[in-house]
Image (tube, rainbow, N blue to C red; front, side, top):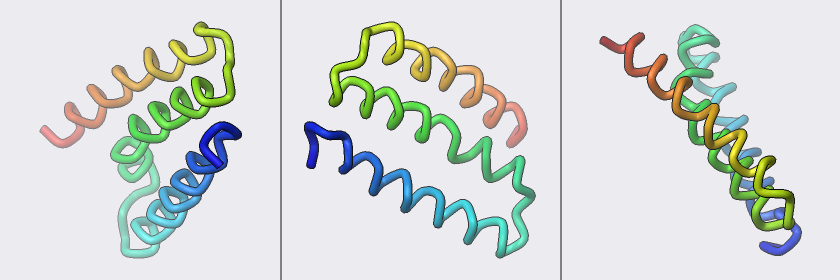
Length: 77
């Protein structure tokens, strides 16, 4: 389950359900995306590492998670 990346797929499904729940409770979808985005990107990097992708495909979502995280922090400020 871990070597195939399916464990990460389950966590991503739970995060998708959390996103839907937040939007249903009145959050703007952009705010929910900024809040959950860095974690999703890091999980995608983890999935890539588990299935043996090239390091560039692992580094890319990790690199993208920082600006999304900083945008979320700036929005909350």
